[in-house]
Amino acid sequence: MRCCQVTRRPAWPSGPRAGLQVPPGDPHSDPRSPAGVSCMVAKLARTCSLRIRPHTLNFILADSAAGGGVSMWCELPQENFFSEFQMEGVSEENNEIYVELTAENLSRALKTAQNARALKVKLTNKHFPCLTVSIELVSVSSSSRMVTHDIPVKVIPRKLWKNLQEPTVPDSDVSIYLPVLKTMKSVVEKMKNISNQLIIEANLNGDLNLKIETELVCVTTHFKDLGNPPSASENGSEDRSPEQMAEVQVDIRKFLQFLAGQQVNPTRGVCNVVSHKMVHFDLLHEDVSLQYFIPAMS
Image (cartoon, rainbow, N blue to C red; front, side):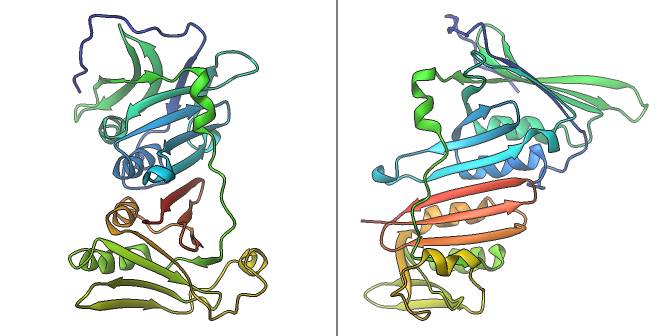
């Protein structure tokens, strides 16, 4: 992977530094591996922020919902992914690092490490801030060779950290378990040829509807008996009947992008509908959690 050359040397704080060593051989399609996580994130966001803390890593997309953008919060615990992990933040009180990167660059680098003997990722400064991925590959003759990818990153100043915190999840009108995501993706791909807008409806009886409406046609796909999380009835309005639908209208392309990022069905998937405001998806891939927010269309 080639990196762009810059003539001016960006300021790189002397404090933050981090390094980690990943167990080799993780398939890039598995969202429970670092390569799989980066592949999923690359499908959801062109650029994103990476927050490094002593015990967790987060991939963050903080587009303003008010501006029509989506938001993402992906979290993975370092102890379940890395055999070695060392980091030093700005200070003891602010022991964390924030960088911005192109997600596809990280995904491409980690894909080449699928059959690696060892994989190391470090924050470095090679005339510009980088996330350096070092991969030890083994040839047929059992000899090894090193491959290095220098991924340019942008160090995010501390004054902007407040904009990259875990999103507040609003109280939902209805929470419902998701059906098989590949089935939903197949349905929505056909619907996008008819309309750019998708209506998501759900109730406390475990019913989920995907609907498009135009002047000429109305198409609805029904998912029955999905079930509702135990907290759904507690969070929902006491005046809401189990049959009453909560609905939100979203950009069908943004919803399809979310579905396209899920290569493997999650261990658990929940859809939280805030009527006419947003839909919040909460997925768990064993140790990896993903929250994805799509605002309603005005």
